Length: 287
Image (cartoon, rainbow, N blue to C red):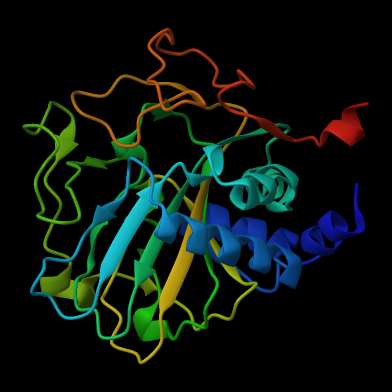
């Protein structure tokens, strides 16, 4: 185990793990050092110069500011691949999930320029993609200082509600499919915010929010005078398996050339390292 991994794990104590299990989210301070932040920033700028097939401008042409997203950058941007495979994220995910093994799934980019009013709608991540299991963690990693009012917001405890809400697209609130059996319409959270325990934090570069993939979360626009760039990464633990979804999914499970993988069976463990690289235990630790 490298000194950097040990230093990151030293910042994730048992109380953080218990907070994650109870609330569904925990803010971890100073997990990522400057070397990793520089890789993320460089990767983000490369993606903005040459976006991938999942690039979306989420704000409308006449909206104030600018809001853009992308997925799966690690497959084509070397800096983000290094961050995913060599950084401390896999070790941190293993500790947070109490998982013996972690495989990497995908990354997401969220850029909101100053004055952006377009929000990220309340949603759960895991209903959007073909993954079942409880040991699935997401890390939201800002590379710019973020005030609480511009931070990701999460509803404490919602990961344990046992509910799947109908997924909607950020840009136009379009549903991916007619509400299937077992999926519920999301309540109007903004109209009754006082009813929920909404979690958010003031954050500095190097901090991250680790949250359960079934947790309700979203964010407002960016009314600050600074950019808000964040990388979101998704990590698969011991019980992560392929799950059917009732219609269109995004992002799809794809290989290194962005071709959809169609050979997976329901209940199959997502541990094929050609698609989901094993990032914990580290290769040097397994040698």
